[in-house]
Image (tube, rainbow, N blue to C red; front, side, top):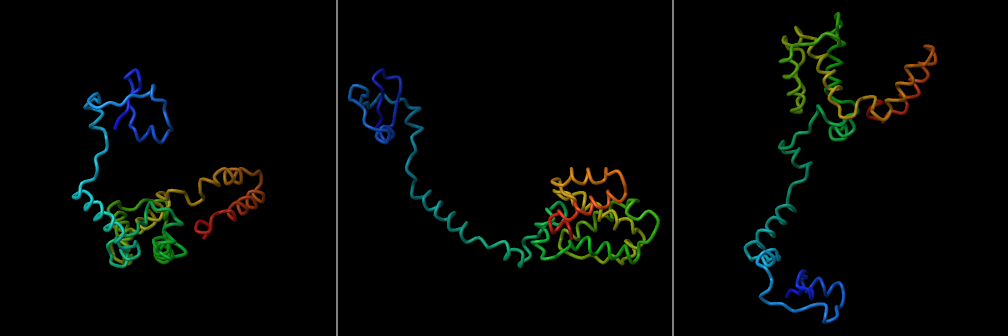
Length: 207
């Protein structure tokens, strides 16, 4: 049932008016055939049995979804390594330090004491191949000839990991403090200030 105002310019659902309060009879008028087609079409229609069953099915489906942990155990869900928040990545992987950094730095310390390490870039295809393997939760064999002959691709992968962190290693929050620390007048003062700011890093970043 719809009600119109006495000047017939405004339409109100009866349910809305009843919720608002009582109206004097001279303010409203009962109407039947005066409701425009556009208004009647906008009135919500009761859910059909067919749609009701669909809604019930969807609710049941959503409640029965497997947990994130179960999906990981089945190998369906893979955790990102690159471009993932450092704290979140370590929490999901259960490591203190990202595996990609651990593997790459150990390899470089053993095989990569060469000129330009961490400065020269490796071959792009090798870098992407390594990235894909780490993103697939695999630990690639870095002793393969392809990587031994292109040690710089391992150093480049480390830099790529740091570059893609959503919040940088030294964090946006401490940027100004690090900036002030490196601007100190003397080496001794600079060392003290940088040490002080490093102590303020979040534990995952500090490690």
